[in-house]
Image (cartoon, one colour):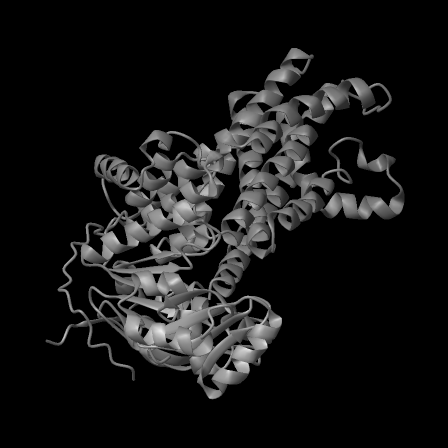
Length: 270
Length: 319
């Protein structure tokens, strides 16, 4: 043992932090932080505002002419564009989570006893807020270029509810990816996987037009029931079992992502 | 008078895989003191700090910080410490004031209290003019200052500074030194790591020299310096042949030579009489010596005396 018989100035510092604020106050602070960062990130803003408009216009005016779905294409494609944009949007979450975990800020938060769940919750809430803006924008553009729906209020609520639940699921998945990734670039790359997953689904072309080997995959992957449910709600078709599949997928993804995120977070910060 | 130890660790050991980065390290810092953990890259400094700041668990050994165990009572420890690491831990997209206010809020302050504490610290660290600017636009030195300020929002009892001045320009380094000294005067206990010998010398009450995961020497900066037998006279010869002649003449009295600079170090008491007679002895005709310096041994000399290697050699051996 090495003894320090030191210039023993008496040390009495008042600690002004009381730290009994609890999880809710911390969650509010972290959410405010994530929202502020969202509003100031040029990348994030382009993803949230410009991509939705561009995708909507691209599908209608570029591809819409050659794709025959039996209905007015804008009415067909809106759910698909919503989900692709949601995929892009949650990419921002994966990147921000990865950034927090690969810079010194995670040590600062941890040494202040901010819980991992609280930090991630801030990112999740910010993602939902960004997506509210993106989704509203998509509907606005869709209406402007001819989208019409005779859906009742209940059907609208159903469509929006399914959409919100699935975006929440994608967001948690993105958060888990952000924790898993070793860098924000890696996180960004990994989220492209599930943006791409939206294409071999009923999002842009009817599944029966795909080669048979792809059809099985397209029918049973999570994007398809979500898109079909939203589409059925909006064009007043009776909603079938796809709604239950969509809900089951969403809840399953959320539960699995939270478990994996928790496990990975504890492992990384041990 | 026995001061309460604010940091007390015994037998700390930590390995990453087969690499033992800390090997049975003991350390104790009384409240209100500054301890410098001095060592080359890869010596185990950062691991030591991370264990004491509850961010890593030791494989063996125990540590108490501010009176609480860093493993079983980590929450209590976290309320009383701050860690300023080597990476700047701030949001580039938030302003300086917003960053500090956020930290205050996370520490349980009201919005108002957090904002006023933020202003107070920004003033103290000479950052008021930049308070509203995004941190991404700050210079390196400003960021480090803000980072340190962020660690102080909650007036921690124990402050860990992991290489606080690495990569800073001389002006920012001086500012940082001033701030650290003020903190100690205000009563905080500080453990700082550094690779800079002059920094440990300048700031610390106590220095622990760490290399290869072990503390190889400890004491006050003065004690460590005394190990190298007092002041030395550094003589600068005019050319190579004269250097060789003087070197041969002095023989065993030589402490250190640098042939490329044509300098020879010999021990002296530092007094005018002895220095004068030494100079006359080596250069009776007053033609050989170009210049001389009497200097106290630096901590680099200490490193040499303890390990037989210079700090940079140790660092190279470690890589």
